Amino acid sequence: MSASRVVIAAVLFTVPGARITLAAELQSSTLTAWNDYVKKANLHEQERAAGRLPFLWIDDSPDRATRLRHGEIVIAPVAEDGMESVSHGLVHDWIGAVFIPGATIDRLLALVHDYDSYQQMYRPVVTSSRSLGCDANSQDFQMVWKRKVLFIVAAVRGDYRAHTVMLDGHRGYTVAESVEVREIEKYGHPDERLLPPDTGSGFIWRMRSVARYEERDGGVYFELEAMALTRDIPASVAWIANPVVNRLSINSLTTTLRQTRDAVISSRDSYETLASRPNPSRGLHMSRAGGE
View 1: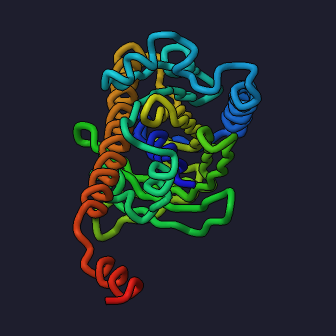
View 2: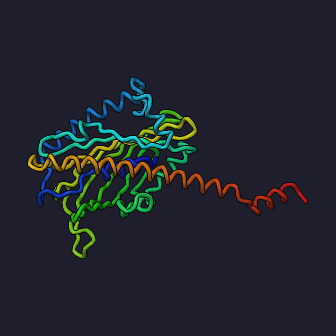
View 3: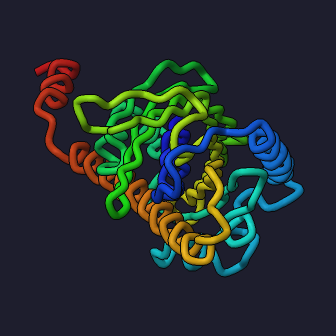
């Protein structure tokens, strides 16, 4: 499937873009805290997949689906205030949803499976993307992304693996996780270089996302939960940095969902236009098949 790409894009776009100190290596205690957080999140996701909770987050509140059908994009924090402090790090956890009118699951998945097109669909943040291999249920791919905030340019190359589960012909979900994340030092300069994993400025250390999608009400509801592990923010500047980081998270996830909706609608419209055009070869084939 391809929602994985959208999912990862959403995760990438939620990382803070400001450098606070020059270096921050990932600590073992930070990684342990991240793994514990992911385990808890996975249990909650299993509850939704098993039907013990509403499958879609939007159905937790009766007005969300209505707001989406009216064209709104709904965003909310999953972690308290969008961030949870852990040892020497921060877990960022946000969820958002969009309704794509006239779309189908097949059309959505066909689009998001096209990993090589992510650099066009999600530009200017995604600068390159490519598939590394796929099978029936999983996909491996690589993306390079960059963000510029004030005078700071953060660039990261990541390898990702995504796993897709279709519950039936109308509902499914994709879990996507980073396999390797490496910061690109001096991105765009002749002397740019890839840093070793878990080193650098701590823009992003780990990523995990869940995309859920359901076809109903004349379209597809598409929601993304984006989780990321980054360096921590010193207490001395947290009062001013945290609101900025959260605003970036909301804006970035909103942009990702809007770009996804626009791409699916554009793809649908292009297909319908092509299908409506006269096809001379089709008429010739019918004439031959039926004789003179």
